[in-house]
Image 1: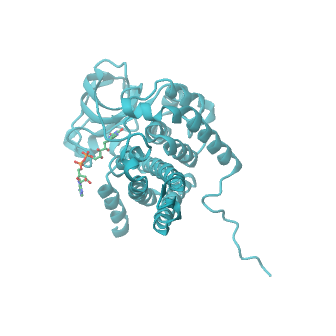
Image 2: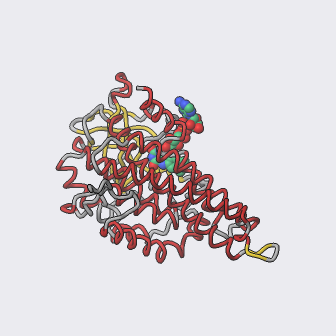
Image 3: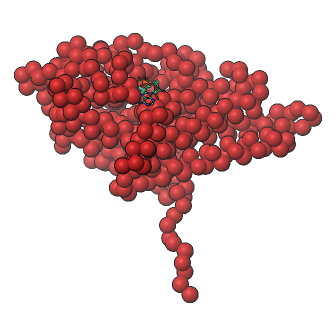
Length: 387
Ligand SMILES: Cc1cc2nc3c(=O)[nH]c(=O)nc-3n(C[C@H](O)[C@H](O)[C@H](O)COP(=O)(O)OP(=O)(O)OC[C@H]3O[C@@H](n4cnc5c(N)ncnc54)[C@H](O)[C@@H]3O)c2cc1C
């Protein structure tokens, strides 16, 4: 009789290469990041020696072709890296996330062969990237951005202020969005590759944040910042498309960060309830506690499957924008719930900075805000349904 089982693999079954990669990242996160997590969070300062380690370990060009020093992988490998690092520290994970899923991805897709030649060898060996779209007056309404680009000879001058820029304190290359033809509305938005040492470029105030405190989030000030003509990324006036399409991919990375944070919290809670004793027994023996853990694990499994599937769709060249928006929305909601339950299972100790629960709780919140708030994800999902 014919065997009707399909050969299709479960989403969580990893190839040998994926398994080895994940193990290597986990080992790095456990041994080199974890010992510093508490101090970095307290100081709101990322250790400068960890960023070169990301590069040395091959985590900063995961999707960049090998000829430029990258790993030649897909976004699924980025997801594995981001998830493993976020399990230990969401701040460390966002350095790797923004660099891979926003910066190198945008360049990969929209950069010219000359831009690839010029930037990839640097972006895979030490030059950290950042993605600068948001401004004080434009967040969800990103295309209302006020930064202007004016042609000057063969180049451009950029003037405006960017806000909330992740990696801002340490990055050397920024993808900056500015409007080159305001009369055309969003169809004037253009993307530029801006280096930190370009004249007229300055990094401003660093935010003091609730969560992902060790990740730098800064203002950028552009005062007639001189950008060479060859540093326009993609066609003039297509910046809105570059922003939307890059963020579609980026959201899968934020989903990965959220499932990593949630897994860290679930593992911490599971260990704690076995140790903490009340009423003469470990609190893990109470069915009420067991059911809380079971709910957390079920939520996490669903979120992980959504994130993995969005990544696998992207790597298979299939449409994935809806699934990415759903994965980001759901995984950030799940991370919010799981980290809250984790904190409650730690009881009073959950409220103390001596224990890890409160940090997971603070770190989870950002998932509902950046790369499009939850309402913006719902809008994308609804648009897809109703079109
Ligand atoms: C830590 C951190 C790091 C960040 N990193 C980056 C970065 O690297 N690069 C970058 O460019 N930006 C970055 N951002 C900015 C981030 O993407 C924006 O904060 C986000 O898009 C929301 O914009 P906003 O803060 O202006 O909120 P607003 O747009 O003012 O939204 C406020 C509230 O109104 C709701 N809302 C707005 N419009 C609608 C609508 N039409 N329908 C329903 N509800 C609506 C929102 O959902 C939200 O709840 C970062 C932000 C933070 C906090």
